[in-house]
Image (cartoon, rainbow over all chains, first blue to last red; front, side, top):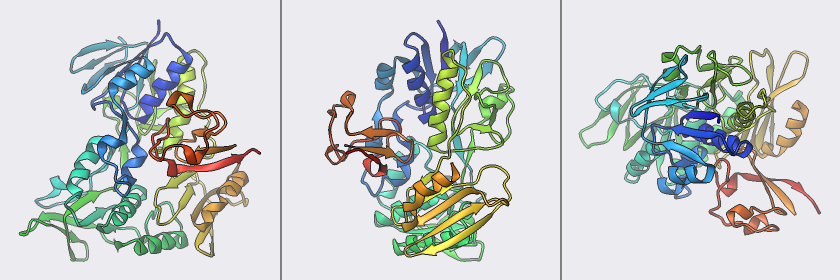
Length: 378
Length: 56
């Protein structure tokens, strides 16, 4: 009987386990996780506050329930220390586990901002349920929040914090929010809408120091010399694939664990899935690629080799103050943005040299065009 | 009867089929699905769903 060992209990690990179980009732599926193994909705972390959802409400199933529902054996609070590719075993804090197929679903970890000061250790990041619990507890008493990072997750948190009644100030070097994903008019529109929702901005700037002031508040020193006061400092400057275990095991890694279209790593019998992977030079830390990847990998591991084929996967940014859907152009494309402002929104098309639609950004009322745009790109 | 798609993960809720395994009977309209119901695949709430298909 085949034995599948999954490292990681995030959306990737659990979706793969569920899909593999659907296809093979007999396969032994073991999951090892450093966390408590609760299943929770990661996309909800950045918009749970305004909904009044506490951490326990975000967790929809315990590890025991997941194990029961899908016929898994789950080792919680257990860190994997190493992989022996030849022997097909992994070493954990509790001993050794053997596998026929190993899947690394180790996810991504927050990039640490280059800060100085005596309160750097108290800067929060929210990347999993335990982080959210800490954030949720601290934000209860916080009125002023400084948020470093005007990217996708940063804007979602900014919207959520503003709607839940906090004075939030977003800091970042970009000229407009989501600087790397949005062309200028779309970025300005998003900024205006979030400003109306109560978000303040310090753009074109970086945070240098974070110190604890006399009154107990945080003092954030910005690159223009301004000192911003806040009751809580949140960093959301980006994620990087967690490749530590893979590197240690000698697997080929770039920005992420390098996989082919079958999600196979450079080692036999070792696959990888989710936010930890790099495929065709791309790191896609979104839900949709995980779902497509998990379904293909489940087929591969149950005897039907299947390459992952991604359809166009638009990303819906959860900023209720400003509806936003984007499909970033993939790979090294040399196109240009064509932006069109309309009543209550901006439609931006990314077109290649031959005029083909390669990506888009729809903001405000323009999100209604999503289906039409997807048809054009299809 | 209508179909509703989760914009985050692509899961489809089909009113005609319901979700009997979650106690939602076939034929349950979207508006009658409990407000605190979560996507069975990725866990997001009902406001992340959009109508994708309307069948008379």
